[in-house]
Image 1: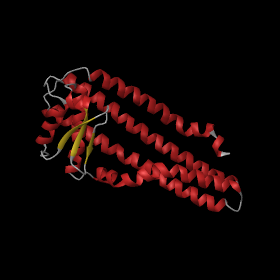
Image 2: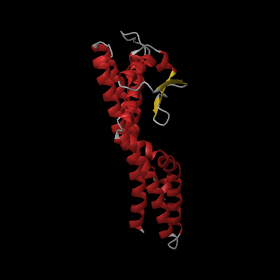
Image 3: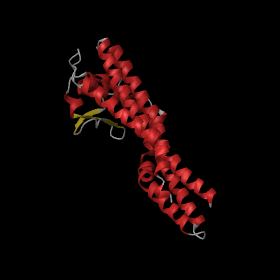
Length: 240
């Protein structure tokens, strides 16, 4: 039965697992290395963010310190940039890159960047789909295997779960241009007006490129899982 088909699951998920592991190694290595290298301008992550925000007409955006590591994010609802303690207080190449990347999201919000608007609009649906989608799918698939009488009903339930989970895969794809564009904005501003040397920009590029790879891995994993569910559903229907 489908619960025991681990080989098939690995076929769809192994590339994403390997890519995800590589992405985590890259981001930990790059962030760890460049968090120990101070910037020549002497600014903390919070100061870099404030300077970049003000330079782009975003003086109304607040900056807050939040607990955790790499918990940095921009909240478009409250127009608040939230930086983790290591980024907010530190003067480092990594802190400058991460802070500027989050400002990139504030710039996207200012310009009504369409992919960011789509991602924000999808958040409620994705929260439901990522949680209930797999549960509904497996319940429907189980019903479809019980008897021929329940096969069609179970298939419809499983298909509904598949559609719910598909929102997660779409969300991960929409996230890619949002994150890549924010990094491009950060790199462009830091290179032109950030007061950093070429070798410092090399470090920022490595940190932000490694972070981007984690989003690519997440997208590959979501798509692989979606394809696995689709194969179970439609492949099993053809065999009956």
